[in-house]
Image (tube, rainbow, N blue to C red; front, side, top):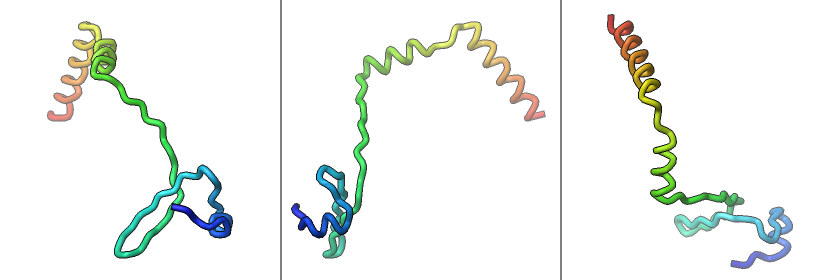
Length: 76
């Protein structure tokens, strides 16, 4: 889609700007937008992060014990 230079200048739209074009009920709206870089991770990468994020057995037991004690205090 091409906009006249005078329209772009009036709206402050520059070459390379990201715009969102929506159509609804026979009308078209044009809004400024942004581009966000998104990284995709493989299942293997996620599995490795999960493996690296495991608690040591002693730490896990300590946390579970603390949570259990706190829960019993709130129930009493």
